[in-house]
Structure formats: structure tokens, C-alpha cells
Image (cartoon, rainbow, N blue to C red; front, side, top):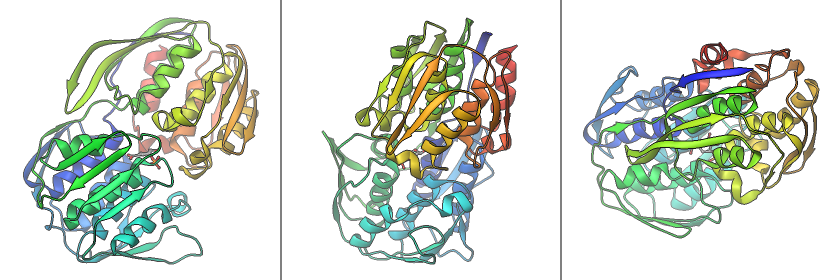
Length: 420
Ligand code: S3P
């Protein structure tokens, strides 16, 4: 397979969610350029509307008139987060710090995902959580109110939990200190710092000092490294050509997949590095190389957690073994991704096995793969196997390709375009 061309993948999902939330909570007008217009981000916009925020339809430039930290209102309807864990967890932090209650609901996948990880620390701050089911999933009602400050040692490496606590502290005007053993994506910290929030960041500790207000701020949304990773992977498993991926956020807390692709033997270079919207961005140029297996361990995982499905597919095309450990978080993503990766790799003819906290793939070089993939409605499983299915001679059927729309609505068109 030969690949050629330039791809500008859509806007950064994590930054888009946060830009809408901070826009709604800011004092004055915030302009967000290049927001991701996908189902997940629409979920955040919809919940903010239900909370009384003035949130226009998402467009190339989305202008948000913020109502300030205390401008949100008690919702009259359920807060529907669809498939989006980031919406549910971050917005739970915002509601926890506000003087009203909100009932969070989501689709079947989101309803299975653990919310106890945000409920425990937010309860310690003084919020109340009521779960309707047996476990700690949605539907859940968050009763917000006057909170007290918190020092929290993270139980999981999770930027969603860290961000929920920082947002709760910001809205409730109380100090929050979060201790992380493994660094996770720091977009919230960067965006807070850009909006006048007093935030101290030191090795493993993020401390919010309440200031009672949030400045409005314009946000340029870079391309999402998680979406770019599918095309970097495609170029790595191609036989010839190269792809240029424009405006990609290369924040080191997010660039683990690019580092691993290089370790596996792909030719990958950053060009035109610059800072935009508080993040380092670059054009990433990727081409094939002799691919070999890699070892990925716990410390690497947060920087590539969402890219493990596609890295597993690249591993199937490499020579030798790829071993991923310390990635138990994959079990509680949009699907049990350890199971989904391994079952689907086997279904298309690759050798893989599950580990309790990861998986092993025994690669057998570039060759066609054939079989039926069950996505379990998980966008990243669909797109990862879409990349593998692009190898000439492969015949991979994907049960629900449309689920890519939660993060990358134009994925299939872009894939067809660069394959020529
Ligand atoms: C996200 C954090 C990660 C990631 C998710 C987006 C965020 O989740 O998997 O896609 O925007 O903060 P965890 O915090 O559960 O690791």
C-alpha cells in the first residue's frame, strides 16, 4: 500500500470539551476556533445548555457568552452525556461545586463506566452522589453545594478525575490539591493558567488556589493527537509514501504513541514546531520503516492510553512480540478494550492474548488480515481495525463503523482519500 498526502485531523477532543466548559464559566466572551464537532463534544454542549449556559451551535468559530463561575442554573431535564466519559466526569465536578442538583445519564456503554472515582473525592469535598443502579455508574444524581477544600492522592492515573476536582474547586471557590503518581494529560492546567486561575504545578502535585473568577479567553483548538495516531499508524504499516499530519498537539503527556511508533521502526519526524493556544503543535511526517515489536509499560500508558487499540494493530504488522502491561484502565473505557483488542485481532487472523492489565501481540509482518470485527460501539476499536483493513488484500468487516462519529466524524472519508 502506498499512502500520500496531507491530513488535518479534526480538533482536539479533550481541549474542545474543556474550551466549552471554561467558555460557559468565564466572565465575558470566549471565542473557540476549530472546536471538534463530534458527538462527544455535542454531549458537553448539550449538558451546558441544560445548565442554562448560552451555548451556540458548534461551528468553525464558536462564540460563547460566559455567565461566570456562578452563572449556571439547576437543570430542568436530565444531563445526557451520551457516550462521553469526559463530559460525565468533568461536568460532575462542575455540578458538585454549584448550588443545585443534576441527574446524569448516558448510553449503555457510559452507564457501565465507573463514576465512583469522581464521586469519592467530590463527596469528601461535601457533594452528595446518588447512584440508581447496583454499581457506581450512571444514572447518578449529583447534589452540589457548599464544598470544602481537598487534598487528594489519585487512585487511578486519570486526567478526567484530576480535572473534575480542579473544576469543582474553581466553581466552589475552595483550594484543591491533587497528587499524581503518574503524570496525566495537563490540558486543564494549561487552560486554567491561560485564564487567570492561580494554579501551582510541581512534580506530581497540582494545587488550585481559589480566586473566585475565571477570565474569558479565546482558544485555538489544535488537531487531536489521538485522531492523528490512526493516520500515523497507517503510514507506518504502508509499504511506501508518507503522510503529513498538520497542526497536531504534541504535548508530551499525549505524544506517547508517536514515541512508540518511532521505537517500532516507523520514520516519524516533527516539523514546524510552534506554540498555539497554550499547546505545542507540529506537522508530523510519517512513513514506513522495518517494524519490530515494542514493550509498553505502566509509566508510558497515560500518554498513549487512547492509542493502544491502533498500536496493537500496528504490532500485528511488526516482526516479533509487543507486550503492553500496566494498562488495566483499558478495561473501563468505552468498551473493555483489552478484550476487544485481543478478540478482534484473533478474529482477523493475528496472534494475541490477554493479560490482566494489558495484552501481548505476536506480529507476523505486513500482510492482509481478514475477518469480522465487533466494535462494541467503541469508536477507537472501529478506527483501529479500519486502519488494519486498509492493507491491500485485507477483508475486514466492521459491525458499526458509524460509531467513529463520537470523536472523528470524517474518519472513513479521510481514510479512503489518503489510500488513493
Ligand atoms: C480524557 C482523559 C482520559 C482519556 C479520555 C479523555 C480527558 O481518560 O482516555 O479519552 O479529556 O481528560 P481518563 O482520565 O479516564 O484516563
